[in-house]
Amino acid sequence: MSHRRTAVGLFGFVAILSGFFIWSVVPVTQGAEDGAAKTGLDKAFPLAAKCKRCHERAYEEWEASPLSRSIHSPAFRAMLNEYLTFSGGRDKALCFRCHAPHINEFPEHTETFVTQAQSGDPAIDGVGCAQCHLIQHVDRTKQPPVPKYVTGKTLYGPYKDFVSNLAHQSMDLDLFRKTDLCLNCHLAVPMATNLGNKNDLLGSWATSASVKSGKQCQTCHMPGQVGESANGEKKRTIANHSFPGRLGKLRQDAAKLDVVTQVKGAQTTVTVTLRNLVPHNLPTTHPGWASVVLDLTIKGKNLKTVFHDQRVYGRTYADANGEPTVFDFKAVKVVSDTVLKPEETRLETFTFPTPTDTRSFDVEVSLNYAPVTGPPDFLQRIEAESTKGTQDPVFQPIPIVSTAENIPLR
Ligand code: HEC
Ligand code: HEC
Ligand code: HEC
Ligand code: HEC
Ligand code: HEC
Image (cartoon, rainbow, N blue to C red; front, side, top):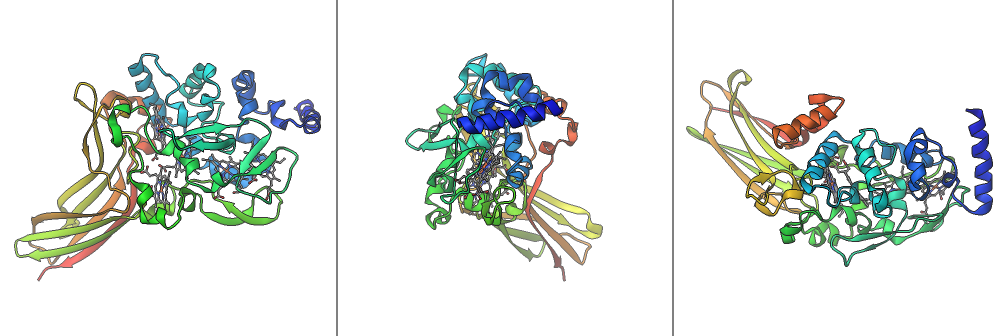
């Protein structure tokens, strides 16, 4: 390996002198040598692994985030397969527009993206560092908004007073502190073109109190902290790159539950006031199976469940044959929409027979992200694609918030 290290040093030195990216001439990873480097993809969009050397903290946070697995997840591969079958070879790039957006700059390499994703262990990044830090502008007049990539030697970021370095030039853009940067991937589902104004992921986020008070997506999803932006540099305000959402403790801020139980003789009524605290839809409505479930369990004598009920918040789509579908690329119609709207308060009432032969009963209420649903062959495909089989996280509910209370009976 030592000869390679020498080569890096030499090439790197030459690259700096001639003003090129270090990574533009030196393939470092196995993957780059196998495929991506040949295509020129790596040159324009250096792999995240190349930023790790100097931006270890940002890299490690990103690596733990869903963004680092945007073309790796078994659910993505299984749904990509459904899409490719459905579309019959038309617009093979569609899913990658957001899941590996450099395809927009390299449409001629669409097959590479498809086969790399299908391999389950792609040598290309999905939403890597460069896929955000080379965006120079986002055109909000388009629906969905369109990013403009400038693949040169400059990386865009939030700092005016950046420290200069030998690997790349830096430039500050206001865009990096603004929601606009996120919208080109998070605003709309482009495949669901027939859905009109139902083709939205976030809902009426722009008029939410939180956004009106000046919050951007980054305020909550890339919270500021103090640390080193690049290894060994001075401490300053940096942005968390683990993109908390379904994962991480941010989700405790997603919703609030207030539960009131009224025993009226033989009937008991539980009223749940469910407040969506986020300035966008809960859940966001892609992929089509995304849903959040409010679950009520009543436990009587010996903690035995005597009553159970639930409410589901999500969208149900129908395909061209009028059949329900979890695949939003097939959707031509929204059949039902119970998604919690930005900052909405929803009141749910459950009535059931008051438990007998017990001195008290438990009222347990929880809000969870539901596991994946869909046709059996699709679920089997996810299982087969996953090294964890039925234990893949996509088959598990994710708890958001919950309450439990013991109600005495006289
Ligand atoms: C190039 C497209 C793209 C851009 C730009 C982008 N995202 Fe994403 N984002 C994705 C994709 C794709 C996923 C899903 C990854 C996966 O799980 O497969 C995702 C996932 C997320 C998640 C995790 C969601 C969950 O279910 O837990 C959060 C949070 C998030 N993005 C926030 C942001 C924020 C904030 C910005 C702007 C600073 C942003 N994203 C910009 C494409 C993008
Ligand atoms: C407009 C941008 C966009 C397009 C196009 C898009 N996605 Fe996504 N996708 C996202 C974002 C953003 C998320 C994260 C959503 C969230 O967590 O709220 C996501 C999440 C997902 C997830 C759940 C996370 C995971 O990786 O398991 C799957 C599966 C998925 N997309 C599959 C697809 C497939 C297949 C296609 C093509 C048919 C596609 N997407 C097209 C933006 C997009
Ligand atoms: C989804 C888009 C996105 C991805 C992917 C992303 N970043 Fe960032 N990054 C941002 C945004 C937005 C900011 C500015 C946030 C702020 O200041 O509020 C930022 C800030 C930074 C900064 C300056 C502040 C800090 O936190 O140190 C560095 C350095 C940086 N990113 C490096 C990286 C590296 C390295 C990777 C890959 C491992 C990466 N970014 C991946 C969007 C992204
Ligand atoms: C040789 C070390 C080195 C490498 C490799 C490197 N960076 Fe940097 N980068 C730095 C230093 C040093 C800074 C300045 C940090 C500061 O000002 O606190 C910086 C700053 C940044 C900023 C902030 C720019 C601004 O004006 O806000 C971003 C974004 C960034 N780097 C992204 C990346 C990405 C993406 C990669 C990989 C493609 C990468 N860097 C590779 C050393 C490096
Ligand atoms: C006031 C804070 C706040 C702001 C601003 C905000 N979010 Fe969220 N977001 C949350 C919380 C809290 C959650 C819930 C975490 C969870 O349980 O997934 C969430 C969840 C998400 C998820 C994953 C949940 C899902 O249903 O799939 C995505 C994706 C997301 N937000 C994107 C965005 C984008 C894009 C913006 C900017 C337009 C934004 N958020 C603005 C607080 C915020």
